[in-house]
Image (tube, helix red, strand yellow):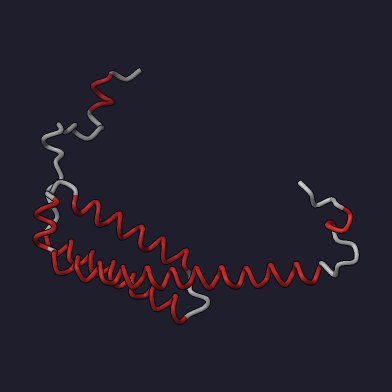
Length: 141
């Protein structure tokens, strides 16, 4: 059987916690990530407003990936520094998110309205009054 030292020589060197500190990402990287998030939000807003077959699942996956990238890029840096350097981009992003939220709410309200119309139509078509549960008292709780 091989000795521990032989096996350990094939492994990468261990790093201590102080050596493993991830440096704060360059401001350009963060600006690029914010730009990608803005683009994704713009695409989703336009898709919700104009395209009935817009793929929300793919859009959500893309936004999650960009949020993950942003979180990783910010690791090791200070939030105050990030806010100071990217105030303009974050302000634009906040405005775009507000418009996106309005489009999502309008979409959800439309879906709810259609579902209610369908439910009422189905209930009317099934209930001609002849043999309804209410006539026989079965619907009582």
